[in-house]
Length: 400
Length: 159
Image (cartoon, rainbow over all chains, first blue to last red; front, side):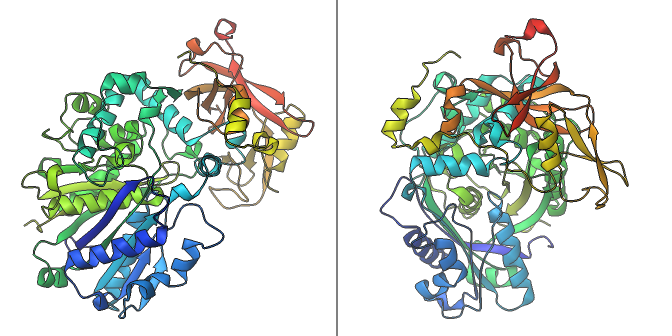
């Protein structure tokens, strides 16, 4: 990808939360129309419709089957659709689906791609969800028999990170506080009506030491969509397109024990080169960024990602967050939608939510959460048991 | 960290769980991992070593993840390890594990150059420390399955 070859011109999003009456199909159809209307384009100009995977399936009416069998273009009346498919890589889906979209755009088959995510966890019982996620986060043969969970995976990464960097549990908790402050400004966030304090986060019920309940993300129903096009078309149809300026990717492992690092304490060493690649390709650096749109899913992962972004130095992100620098009004706004901890975790959709928020910010449409004069941001996503990481520098102009 | 224990029977009736929901998950070996579990049952800790390039794979896969060769041998590992990271599960684990709370899950580094997820047992939780030396112990969880777990070498850390 050369800098600024592709752009997002419109987004759509529904509130995240517990909405059992709102089906995943309703979410998908709703956010699709919102994104098309926000982009200001004719729905018939959409030449490709891409969907991300719905986590867990309802055997009576399986969303994933319906989507790969072409339900969405028919339902939204995308009469010009030539290609439809599903692309997913867990929490990294917003990235892998975007690369699919870019391939379609580059093929010349169409110049307009609609990308949709929808999720309704609330149709499944607590036990069904617990079972799914206890297996999804770890290896059924080598980890699950030992009582490993997603939360314990994040907890052991937190424990190692704190021991290695000297980061305090209060600094870890500060990430949750900062996320909540942003979520308070977001109408679609799951937790947007009650502030939390470091003390409250630290003293919440212990789940997996050193993580308390308020340091663990909460699953919610939700969805979002965006319209992607070529830079050339974007300039014609949109007042303020948001361009993809540079990106970096790497894959590490399925099973955390096989993480592609020599020292387990230094996961940041995996992340830094990826972020640097994204910066270099964009011709911009950390000083140029107005936002750091991190999707870590757990507070410590956010710190590790922030460590790698060139603003605090390895192991120093905690102090920055504790000082309020990543909160609204701070010098380094981070995860401005409140992220998985406060926006809510919508399965494969967290990366979509952070990308959509990045676009809203750069289009000046972020409402109360708007970072004044935002021009450039770096966003990221990753999936599985922290299997990969993708950084993208985005901007509402193409530098130099 | 001490918190009220939760009665699994209360949860069981609240959530309409069946006895089946409380059955511990066991490893389901593949054709290429079966020798590991067979050895564990005999209280031997073995690792898959490639005969072509010498790479040790854990978890093992169908063929060597370094050179793709099939040829391999199962070598006796030292049974020594060090603690790289740990978590103490207190709450919110899958139902079959509620009876074990609180328990330690950990990343154990082996001198053979691989890591594994396991439990640290027979340990005073206050004395867990990254880098501490561990030794493998074999837990015959059923007649069929033995899980290798780890305990501190230093007896003063045991609990």
